[in-house]
Length: 308
Length: 308
Image 1 (cartoon, one colour):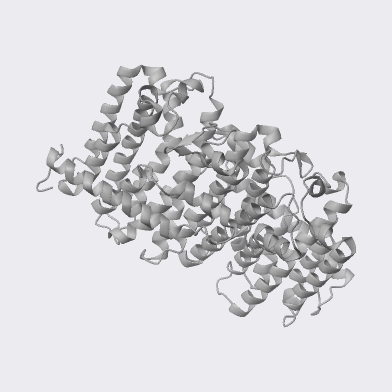
Image 2: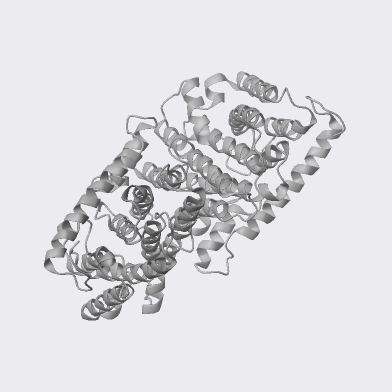
């Protein structure tokens, strides 16, 4: 990455891929260190918490936190726990989302889902305990500068995961099964269900900096809103197009569950067009910035061009 | 309450009952104001969150927070949100605990349980969203003095509800169904399952004070440990003795679910003896204090002498 750019070159894409791979490994190790050991009582719960969180996933939220943090000149070490907290909230939501009373899914990240492996009751508790752990880790983080900073992060994370964020989006989702949604209703659902936590990931990265640059926080927020929605549109496209093996989770389940998606509402071609537009919106949010925003730009490409 | 006492008189018991009734009403109103309105989207989730939290319960945890706060000279207004946060965590745990994959209970506080009223998926999300809300409310509380104080509370609450606290106790509980526990194992389960949050309630009350008195915090912690366990022993006695109508929840369910309880392990008479001893331990933790600890003493009586 030698010069400012708005359209990353192939060379820098290779740099980005190396960076993303480093950060994914870094997050795996931050999570492994900060999750309770399976040798500590209650052992089966701790084992199931580690099973549900470690060993894979794209870590898009952590990558976003790291990229936003670097954009705001945060030290890498200070982004670790906030990024891990967002990944833990995400992992908890997947465990509960896969339960029989929700999506009833058997496969996640190429492995049996938590309830398939440990039973429904344990999976319920895994999600509950992971949620507590996310808040616990930020509240006790020794690297972050001051109490106000941590409190701000906890507030962002609580709002993003609660009834006006992720849980609210899931509630809209389960209420709309079998009911065709308008595009606006679908968008509202996704802004809450996945968008809120993706925004939180970016904001927690930005707030990991010792000094908050409000202009940059605003740019990151706009970027994250666009890319969060793009992420979901691409998810719908992949669910309609990909096979189960590539996806690492059950493909075609939206159709099976009779759910409205961007593909069912817009058709495949218009859904792809929308993903492009959202990608362009995300890029536009960074237009005042040079190479310091390149990680975020590459991430936008990574999210919209992924195949799983 | 005119003079210091260690054994409350009848006259002061009447005062306490009036205080407890005032505080229960106060908590109802704090919760009603701080829960999202059912008129705000997602409406059914918000309605179900209010259904699960408002309209009753003994509010033992809130009473404990208020009594501990008053003991530490905290202003009443400053205890409101911390106390409400603990009640919200408790309500979330009941909603999840009642689900078919856990205790599968139909009745709670004399009403249909949340999943009976709103379905399993919505009940799952109600619990998740309530947990977020508890952390959100403390993080945004305007009355508490400083960020460090709120952060300390969030840390206590996260630990108390997580895998080494409440969720961990529930995990031990579900793993032990059909397996007879020793008294020590049963105690370990309860110290986590109910004890941790009861301790958190008392500590959050204490930490609501502008200045922390470490000696008093220590006394409150000892008190809360003893009374938390007493609470559970009495719960087991009531489950074995009371009828469903008095209890407001299904009676005899421990036996039905083949669970070890203090009554199955010790017998009814020794369980009652144990409740008395724990009550005495709780009182002993306050022995250096005069009338300023009377609310806590009365609360110990209230908890061990309750009939529901």
